[in-house]
Image (spheres, rainbow, N blue to C red):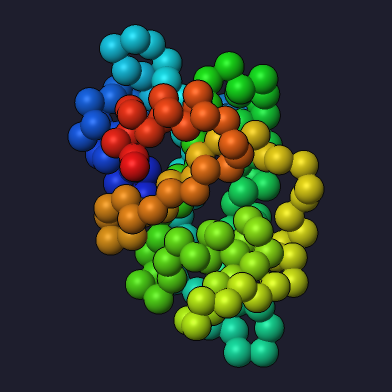
Length: 170
């Protein structure tokens, strides 16, 4: 049976006319899906769900560390399946906490947050994010069962153009 987050992401991708194939879990680390268009394999996708976590008043919000941990895990999964990035690697987060948004992903990836007043503030580097890129081209963020944002991981115009076209991203 599919996990709720995987079902949400799969439904979104199929709504874009893509074919989404679940990769069976085995002894070796793998990602959740292969995603195809009529032209063939478009990208690999790993889905991570962020469940509700209570706020932490003294320390860094635990969601930053949870996101960082998921990014590290996904990086290892992509490395075992597509280390040369023959096709792009996409990491999708399904957020189940209405008090969180894509800014938490931005904070976990960069170590910075944007305050309500629009200023950039430094966080302690959450969860020991490594300086090595984790082989991820694009991060998708789902709230309320819908795509609510995305973050490009690197400046690769060809990959961005192709993924943006197939996913309907602006």
